[in-house]
Image (tube, rainbow, N blue to C red; front, side, top):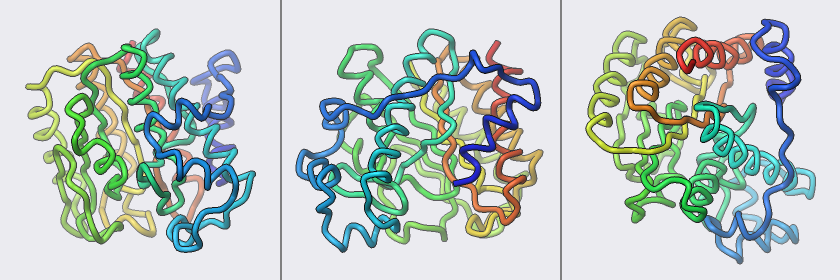
Length: 278
């Protein structure tokens, strides 16, 4: 997608980052991916032998280039998590592939990057009680399903009730939003949810910061302005600051007709983080 190239350019143009702030991930290793995904699914991905039904669910023609891209994205979120442990906050300029299940891809997602990174931190003993805040307009049903029986990872999804997927999974905390939900109502519901979450004891946060919540989005069905989207991000980063939690951020979705709206909203997330996570 165009936004993945334009986000770094816009961040540099705004003076928010320099070249020294970027890292370039390598493809995720099999042993790391298999902490989350099944061996059979991984082998079919690598060998290019996925069942046509699963390829249709993914929505992209399967190719070695696509698989490589997803492996790099997944490692990017692992690396972002490690940087966040050192610096408090780090971003993957892609990621948020939350529709992927352990044994299949779905809705443009082949590997579930946040799930892989969370399981990696658990495996390495770097975190014990993690929170995934998913504010993409679509429920991350793959993430919810992967961690449904794992008490070490708490999943929170706030999503449009009428948007994809039609069949929702059960997160630890789901906040379904009505069609045309206003920005004011959205922020009130998010504040309430974060207040509830503050009663738990977490040691790390993953944040899927989809900008498909914007009123301009073709798929979102919500009515958030650019300012509302920035206030949403501020609530999340304020929560992490108040709780003393490191946070790794992934971009999630964004489908506004104007690419500039998508890129601007994503870059605003970085700017809010820089203002809050000092």
